[in-house]
Image (cartoon, rainbow, N blue to C red):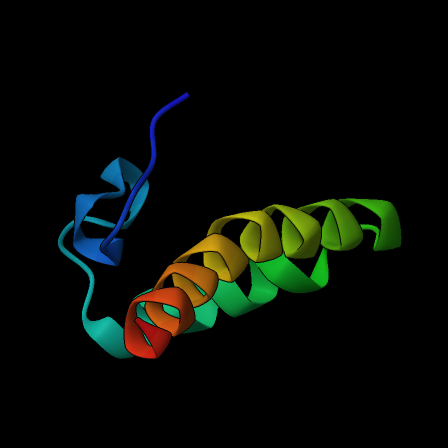
Length: 61
């Protein structure tokens, strides 16, 4: 599985202006089912929460 951190790196969207890339990604997001959206949101939380916990722990020390 490849992770794309920029829309410019997605092969199908290369060469398109930013507004078109955003529009196409928004359309794709609307096609996701509720379980897929939930799973993606949980995965995002699993990545973000430890980062903030580390920042809070570092700030308190």
